[in-house]
Image 1 (tube, rainbow, N blue to C red):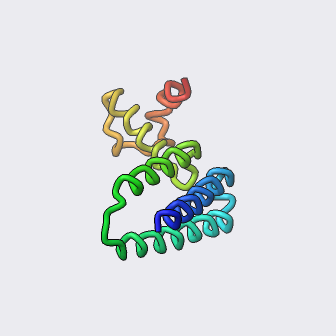
Image 2 (cartoon, rainbow, N blue to C red):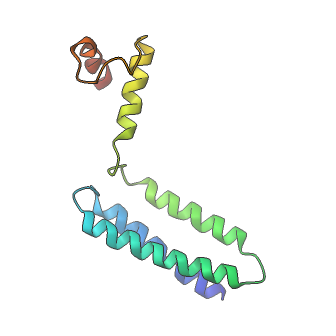
Amino acid sequence: MRVGFYLLAGAIEVCCGYLVSIGDLRSQVHQFWIGFFTAFLVYALAAWCVLRQTHGSTYFILGAALFFRLTLWCSPATLSDDIFRYIWDGQLQLAGINPYLYAPSAPEVAHLHETLRQ
């Protein structure tokens, strides 16, 4: 059964590598769903196999999860631009401005756009 876990982890790693290779996931939605659902199906099969086992595989699961995370770390966050809003809100707070007071495009905070680009 241990070989099966390595094969399933390898399949998930291939899916993670595929997702990283796509690039901008918003412009490649079809390819993203193919990679994501394939990884999910392999993950579901692996979870089913783990639940059927009587002895634990905790270290293998944690190691594989860390390996997957390191692989995906290389890909930029293209599905969400929330991080940019968090950075903008932080810039406003550092300047002493309530981030909910003005929209990012408001002329009252236009001077902060330049400091964000530096």
